[in-house]
Image (cartoon, rainbow, N blue to C red):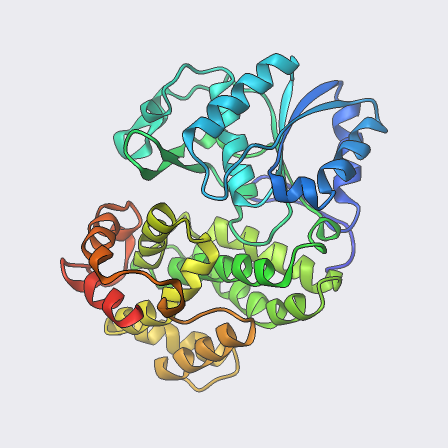
Length: 383
């Protein structure tokens, strides 16, 4: 039942259900921890969620210092400042509370608490993970959105000031010690953010599923997660206090981050560029380009076959065109755009956005080989 407490150990320890955050505070107190750094953001604090979680920890004798200066598209200075806050507080562990931005910064703070900078040294595209050792403080993750699945991931995505590029910092040691999926902490999320983050979770699963790689485990997880997201996101958007729908979306999000160890694709590459150049919310950017990207990708026979199967799972006909129709209706139904026309993206930026996408690490995982001109053609249709 999605409204009950459950515990799992895949891919890390997961504590799920209403009241999970309060229970985990007790668990950490029993382990002897006394001081931690809470990494959140301004929105989380304004919603009162920081106070709620600090209250849980204070009640069991754990003091939490707070660092909340995290941008929606986090930059390396957020990480450096967070690491300073960790050291100044004499913290023993890092607790991430928020969406993907706060959780990604929390992971990188965990790294910089014991490793020397700059962050560029640990760029995954430059084999930076070899410099990350397992001498970092414990890390616990509490998502307040159902989108990135960062709470079960081994990566942090940070924009580096020196390159102005979203950069993946990866290490198996980044995996949270405990991921806390408590739907009670997501009920205050506004409908638009619920929709945008929920679509991000869906896209993680969809891009993983259609990727041209052999990974039956990821495929099975992705298909199940997409069915859950497809049915529950509209409910969560309409009725934010529906704990069952909120819980199912937290699961779909965590499943997406588990599945995309297989791969992501050009949808994310374009969305990353829109985030860097226009500070567009990641989930919103993913939603806006998704329909056209899937139409582009389904020219590959393997993708068309997978989309046809997925359409049937979602209640449509067994063909790729039916999936595109269902996808478009679903996005519109939760208030998400299916193009970029409302964002005033100038046509003059198309070459820069394409260049960024082609260099983005997700691009190589796309099931259809992306060649120069393809992204430009997509963007011309979208703007």
